[in-house]
Length: 339
Image 1 (cartoon, one colour):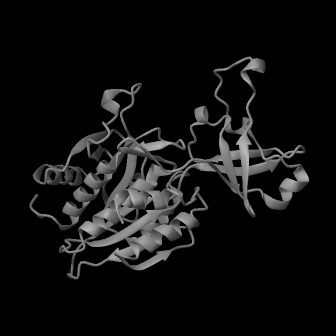
Image 2 (cartoon, helix red, strand yellow; image 1 turned 90 degrees about the horizontal axis):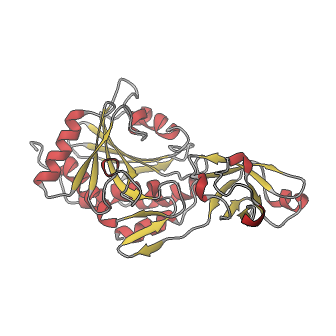
Image 3 (cartoon, helix red, strand yellow; image 1 turned 60 degrees about the horizontal axis):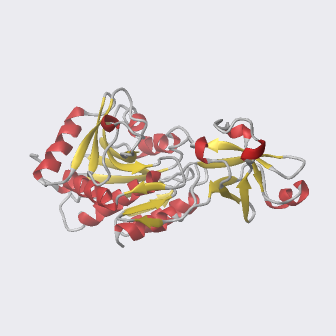
């Protein structure tokens, strides 16, 4: 399966934090082509192993989170409108008048309520999550038949091509899952320098919860956390973003192991893999923060992919950056150990 087809399959699955199982099952099926002992645990984490066949080798964890941002039903008011809370850092500037789906006993379509500009006194106000309501066109009694408190809600969107780019919901971080699967494909005929413990982790968007217990159980020596980062837009700061198509973003941070950063950089240069350096001074905001302090400590680095419009339903990515990140990881695992 090519990268765009894989990304389409994964982004079409629902997996809001805490209810990742639809996405997890799809990812587990893809992973089973490359790994053994593949399972979806009680948290929704997908794990599997690719053994090197050698003795006394170190274990490298490859992690990307499987969950996506969304909402959770908190209340049904007397008029049948649905109140929600956030699962992850929603960009509330984009939420008014959105088309949404409530994943209840059946999938229920709704729209986020908004005041027309004719009767609104403040057009610039960004709503808080507790201030919005969802209109599903039902009475309270009808709604209670098909919707329960705690049901997840997603903003409706779809996979589409935008020129040479791709837009879809949950590119954060289903694209990271694609990176790891593509890296495993590239490694199929190569000798591995590590035993690989693969993890597609749950609940990253709500506090890196899934990877904490997965890393403790898998007990890796090193970890590469694959996530997304900020792609260049007209209103962004150049030094805080990367151009789309500029390749893998190699992390540098107080949290991350400098030796791993330098080795990834050397491998990228030796193999003509496009890359940029992403500096995150104190912490990374990725699962590397949690994995690095698991058990007695784990050497970590991040490999990220630039995306535009993070934490919206129209995230945009360049598939060539997925390929670059996958090639870099494959060289780290199966490349020249002297690089």
